[in-house]
Length: 301
View (cartoon, one colour):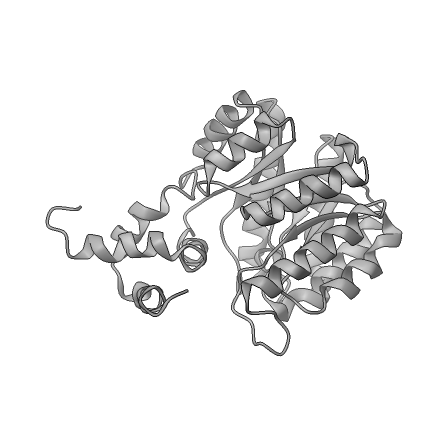
């Protein structure tokens, strides 16, 4: 990120939310579940799968966690009711991880059980490094009892190789992504080339295992490496899929589908869109630049 882009990203918290919301719309299905369901239907018509995320994180009370649990259950119900090809992505801090471990685990297990009844999958997002140990512990407990649950692993964390190797005996479902939270250099790779190198290394480990691999990236270099490894190991369709975020490089997603590979789009919705959008802008400073420019453009809004 060059200095101008870095300055723009740092100034974004001062930008009126109305302006941020306008530019965030490409990354978010909308504020209502109906918006997400309609979008998933369109994606399915384009031969793309989906994973729906109810936006929100770091709740501060059990009542908020129960409210989030009910919202997640409703998503699973509506996916089944509308016969959509979508699974569910969840954040553990939204279900009480920072309140009480056992309380959070019980909430997540309830979702995984319901998803199992519906022949569906729950994918656990990885959040910042303060939650990594607990997230992996919850995943291990769930995976020992259920086969319809996955977890994200972030390639920029230096610990991720050991985390993956510890999970492999469980034949896990792993979403391998770069990682987007701001972490210190003591625990995370900062340079793109180092992150990409580790991503490729971890991908190679996963492809040689019995894991189901979700290749979550928009990086041509990493996608091409995945293509190469898929051919090298002669992997069947039932062993992997590609995953991308809504609104990020849709033309690349279309190419993946046209190449005959399975693609799942991460579809977030909800009222708590701001924190998610700011992370997307940090990842894509060009969009942040458009937001900054709009402030000084007459009649932009």
